[in-house]
Structure formats: C-alpha cells, structure tokens
Image 1 (cartoon, rainbow, N blue to C red):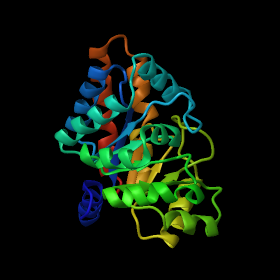
Image 2 (image 1 turned 90 degrees about the vertical axis):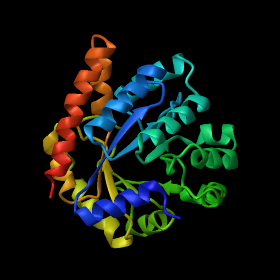
Image 3 (image 1 turned 60 degrees about the vertical axis):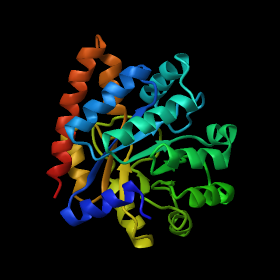
Length: 267
C-alpha cells in the first residue's frame, strides 16, 4: 500500500506541479507553539511536513536549525513529543516524514521506531547521516512497517554511488542543492538542476531539493524542474526573530503564502 507521501507525489505529478515541503523541529518554538505553527503552514497550503527530531550534534544543520533544536531540547523535547507532533500533522491531513540522525533511532529501538512512525501516521524517515552500507537493519525494519526510507544525495555524490543510494530510497530522493549545512542563501546553487538531472538518470522516484530555499523566486525556480521544494531555515528564522508568538505566526503565514505561490508558479 502506498504511503500518503507517495500518494501526494502521484497526485501532484498528474497536476503537473511540485510539492512544497515545510520543515520544523518538534517542540519549536514550544510544544504548543510547534502545533500552532504547523497549523499555519497547513492553512497556507504546504503539501507536506518534515518534522525534525532535535539532536545535540546535528552535523548537517546550520546555525538557524541548530538554534531551534537547542530551544527544543532545553524544553525537554524527545521521542514522545516527536511522535505527538507526527500524529498532529496526520490529523491535519498532510503527509509527514521525520528527519532524524541515526543515534536517536538506535537509542529508541530500530524496529520500534519504524513501527511507531507508521503507527502515528508518518510516511517515512529522512536519515542524513546513515550510509547505505550501514542501513541493512533499518531498511528491513522500515519495509516491515511500510514506511519510506529517504536518503540524501549531494553534488559530490559519484554516479556509481548515487545509483546505489537511490536504489535504497523510497518516497522521494532528497537532493542537497549544495555542499555544506542547511540555511537560507541569496541564490540557489547552480548545481541543483544538474543534480536533479543526475538523480533522474538513476531513478524514477520524485526528487525534492533542499538547502538554501528562502524566497518566492527561489521556490519558483526549483519547482520548474524538481518534484519538491524543501524549506526549513527560512521558516525557523521568522519564528526565531519574532518579538512574540503571535507576531511570529503572522510572519510565518506571510512567508508560507509567498513560497506556496512560488512553487505553484513554477510550471
């Protein structure tokens, strides 16, 4: 049976448009504030949600996401809150995946983690620091639970290795548009389109581009050639910089409206 994420990409392919996937860490800016923010994103028309599992050593994340994760961790956010947030997004009617480093999965229990992702309504998991050589147990657990395994490829990934990675993916392939950590950029890397083309040469899965998208124009550009546009740091930044929760949610809605419009103008 197809996950809700797979169903979404199939529907949007028929509509000839890309998806906007919004990232927020669980428990940020607070447990209740996280739910309010996710509700705002849903109302604005984002197509799917990526929930971050806050972690103390986020090697792929830039300073903005690290700051948000630190706030989440200091408030006691852990697996319980991540799965509560996952359930909340499922109730909103949006496909949802969890982005987590490997250590929290191992601590929680590999098979149990996969089972609970499915049980709380999640479609899959993005594992940025898990190599395919070390993912045999995870792959088996994910298959048993019927969830998507999403791996990250970068411009530096060789063609041979890319084929090996995308063969292990399901749901979509996460294309990191540039080398480095997450965070908004003034322009989208010129390597992004080339990377999408390379992935498409190795797989028929949808390709979603992340790292650096923060404006309507960037979203429009990527939506013209990719199947999904992932935005995280830009959303987090407006919440971090807001004077209070209410004004942060207003700014979040304004940005989400712009990015939704940009994605839908892409084709």
